[in-house]
Image 1 (cartoon, rainbow, N blue to C red):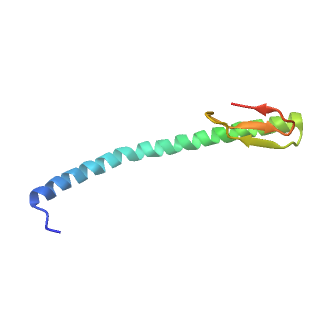
Image 2 (image 1 turned 90 degrees about the vertical axis):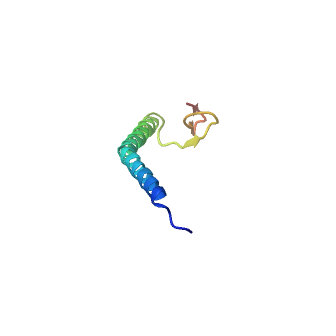
Image 3 (image 1 turned 180 degrees about the vertical axis):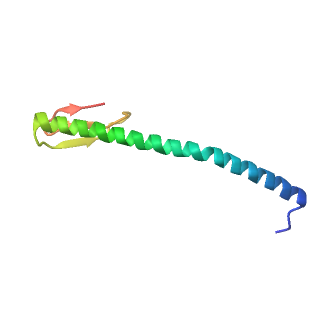
Length: 87
């Protein structure tokens, strides 16, 4: 490959610096997104625990089955009794 001209090197260096600035701006946003994702996972875990404890309290130690439903945000829960709870 041939050597880059001084003009091309200058342009590339300038764009490289712009790229680094954009990355620096993105880093805190990425960290914030990670925190929000962790918080969402925590909320889902709390919701599942609430559901499990409620079923255990009122139905005893029965089998739960989770089933993915098409076009739904969350899964359906099918109790051993045959009752189905859908989103």
